[in-house]
Structures are given as structure tokens and as C-alpha cells.
Image 1 (cartoon, rainbow, N blue to C red):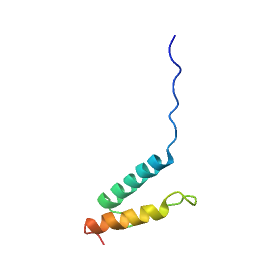
Image 2 (cartoon, helix red, strand yellow):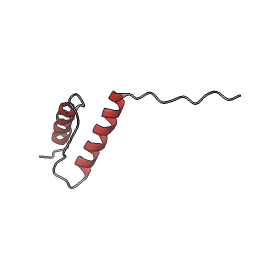
Image 3 (cartoon, rainbow, N blue to C red):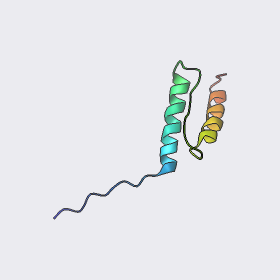
Image 4 (tube, rainbow, N blue to C red):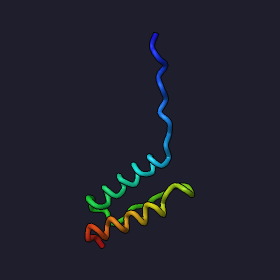
Length: 62
């Protein structure tokens, strides 16, 4: 008898980090000058903006 498959538990913080990493990677390495983020309240938009500003400044990007 095999053990039942375990379902992965959704971790909103980990998902937000993954999305933020992807957005910043695309912004820093891509040609787009901006990003539109359409998400519900509490989804981490302000955190994304702060982190993006810090990483763009560190990379010398305007």
C-alpha cells in the first residue's frame, strides 16, 4: 500500500516573493520601462514598489 499523495500548502508569502523576483528580474533585464500590477489589497504592491526602487537604484537605473 502506498501513502496518499500530499497536497502542497499554499504559502502567500512565498508566492509573493516568487512574483516579486520575476517582476524585478524582467524589469532589470528587459527593455520595458514600467510594470502594471493589478492585484487586490494586501497583495504586496507597496512592498514591490519599495523593493523595486531599492534594486533599481542599486543597479544604477533611473
